[in-house]
Length: 464
Image 1 (tube, rainbow, N blue to C red):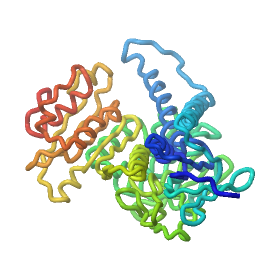
Image 2: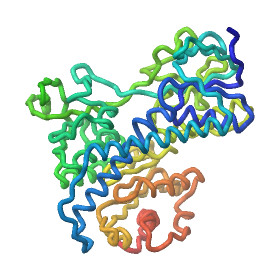
Image 3: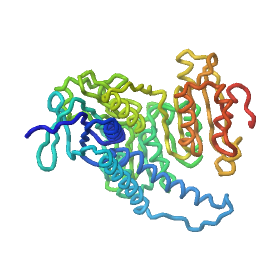
Image 4: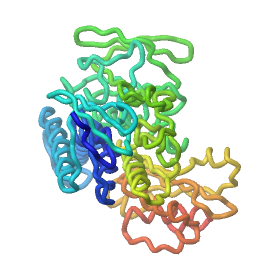
């Protein structure tokens, strides 16, 4: 059977792959996209979107229990766990079907099945009815990643879960152990704890949310412990003993091992790229630590072959993958796109309180030789935060003392995942403190804290 000809083939229809396909089609390329499971990939189906649906439910449930603070009466607040989960699945399904629509709208050919490289410029797709061969001068690998599993801590879907099981769980946990305190672990700990589980978070490093600024990590830990979570850092789960209804965890800290019993364990110890079965070795692609090695433009070093998103390395974020998809599509179409560096990409964690950041932490800036000016502004000094009943939080900014460059911004508190984009734009435009100080922020808004933090770095804060 003759191969179907295209200008560009994308393997994987997650937020990197499908955006790459759309942009390529917009630029006049004949595009095919290969997907073995659901359109939208992990993000839309088993990650970003359904977790936010769950966290929205827990946010409302939390506010119901605080109704008296607002002069309201809510008696007997409860929930139907099956309906909570069902809503998140419906949200995911709606957005996945939206991606199908976008493929049709942009005339992208969708091939359902498992793709692999089959020689120069060729992709073989194993489908339900056999095998299809596609051909193109440019092939983009966007196969994403899956949960990393450590020996002895493997998930079984019953009492020990990965993020996929936690999104469609067999039961509501009562006593939950979360292994790992990155964004995934903390978000699930926050959701299940707010819904009534007794949550314990174990982190091997010396602080939770270890990629964040140390001050933000410390603030987050204090907030979670105030809510009743148990946080254990510099601690390792060595083994899990599984019973019918319980899991006994062997936990090591300070050279001593103890046991603790839980009814549910979520393992959130990172992700690993989906590099297997793609024919990468035969194609001459370099894979290091489970990730495809690429240059800043997504080129693998093999002519006509590119990689984007989680498979191409950190940060493992959907918006990073989408931006890389646009960059690669424009490059293939003959454009001259500008790559984005990792420190220009914001990270967001949608726990309660929310955490968001971009750029260098204070410690990183100092390690790189910058003389810094640091501004801090607390939520308690902001009128809108107090009116919302959300007075706990902090906005922190880090500037180069010599040039005024905004090196980094770090935030914790209500809605900071929406606020961080202001600093993203600022860094992209190479804004200094002068422009940020001159900007007029509307009142009353949470965004005023962003302005005040900048002012504070230069000893000019007005409201604290």
